[in-house]
Amino acid sequence: MKILVINAGSSSLKYQLFDMTDETVLCKGNCERIGVGNSFIGYKNYKGQSKKVEVDMDNHTQAFMQVKAMLTDPEFGVISKLSEVDAVGHRIVQGGDIFHESTLIDDVVLEKINSLSPLAPLHNPGAVQGIKAAQDVFGKDTPMVGVFDTSFHSTMPEKAYMYAVPYEYYKKYSIRRYGFHGTSHRYVSQMLADAIGKDIKDTKLITCHIGNGSSITAIDGGKVIDTSMGLTPLDGFMMGTRSGSLDPSVVTYIMEKEHLTAEQMDKILNKESGLYGISGVSSDDRDITAAEARGDEHAALAHQMLYYQIAKTIGSYFVALGGCDGMAFTAGLGEHQAVMRKCVLDYLKALGVKCDDKANEACDGQALITTEDSAIPVYVIPTNEELVIARDTKSICEK
Image (tube, rainbow, N blue to C red; front, top):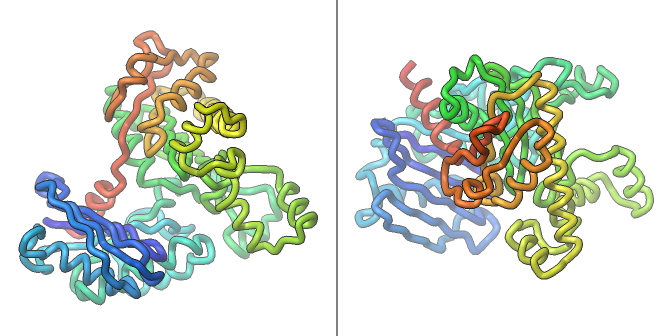
């Protein structure tokens, strides 16, 4: 079975084609700047051949036509015709209170996904466009499966997902904590359980997805009991350009003093805050690291704040879980920023965590980065959200 995995944004479309016989990635790539001009498609196959083509793509249907052309290209392609793709799995950010597991997409499901767009205005509309475009190109007879970022977090108890605002707003507008990066946390938690040699049902785990967008999740017996992101991906600790949690009065105070609209304030909190807002340098950690090395105090402060906030969140989840059998770092910074991991683990010495500095520095791929006598084993585990989507799609189609 060959499964195409799609992650569609408002102006982008990432794709990977899997051969599920052995879960090989046959090819992958992305379409960028859809509908905004100067668009292009990138492609790389399992043979190492790559290609980048600048081509007009006014909408997602045209983007899928370019994906089709790449997949079936006489020189670079990995299939001879589109009918060799048995199913398409779509990453969908917001499943709300409706979707607690991956779901076969039909017209009713598609409408429900679209109805959740107010809760994820930057993500769900792009996913809907991607699904409709896939149906246009592949036809409605090709199964489409939706895999939701929020579904893994649907096991959170009410005490964890509710906000302390009037209950009527939950009833009226579904205001609650949903959590995100669920597909990543799900994959990494299972890999972590395997790494420590336990059935996930017998574990208490903390998974740290640290990238430009970041979240941490507490998982008890394979089920999420709490997670740092909330109604939107803005909640939690500071990120590349997101503020993370703050005193709500900060928002109203700045709006009053600067005479800002809600839309302008939303842009500040989502696009101009976090590491970028504090450092004044960039949202890219590589740039901030370089600035800190040059003696930039604001860059150093941005890192200090981030490491402290990550450690505080981990500590709170240690309490929520009543202990911890293992912890993992994943995603861009989690997998590649050794200094961040070291600084966070140093904060956790009170919990008996002991960083193995040599292992941490040498880490390349999955690795244990704590000493043998550390109270909690901590691993770096590369995430693979696309594989989870492909597996779910295969499972649902076989049913």
